[in-house]
Amino acid sequence: MATKINLPNGWNEVTLSRFAEMQQASDPSNDEMDGGAAEWLAILTGATVEEIESLPLSEVKQMVSESQWALEPPTTDYQEAFTIDGQEYGIIPDFSKMTLGEHQNMELYSNGGVIENLHKIMALLYRPVKRRGIFRRKEVEAYDTKTSPARAELFKEKLTVDKAYGAALFFSLFGMSCMASTLDSSEMLDMILRNHLLENQPLPNAGG
Image (tube, rainbow, N blue to C red; front, side, top):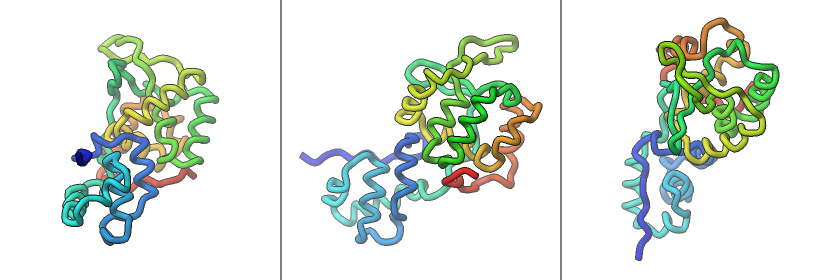
């Protein structure tokens, strides 16, 4: 019985771990016969290369055609909060109040490669929401180096690219210096990410 292969329809169906793998794969539009398309489609769908190679060439061509959206940068929109497994996570409310340890870790992750460490960057920026304060403003947990690694692994496997790319683009383009601004996080991200000059800009693969 043939294995059912599910082709994602957009970045909202691609996890951060799969996204990182896709950046290392060959461009599938070059030639379906050179093996690049099989590797790329295997990563995108979660199938094995052998399963993709067992498909009729016409079907592989159709899959490549239907996944052209994955060759374009994700949207630069960002989300102030998202929910995974019933837990809501919100972005830290004030970049200027980040601790020395948070700054050091952010620079370490960025310098090590934004895409490779995207799950760690998101785990630092987004924390479990404790409660909603005045005007329903979200209050998030303090940064904890003991719980952050587990959250990073959760984000790596379950957080999708559409929820993470905008925030990562901001940090890859503007670095830590912007985080000392007196603007709160949502105001800063909204001001920059919605600027038309940043629309459809590719995300650098490494920090610095």
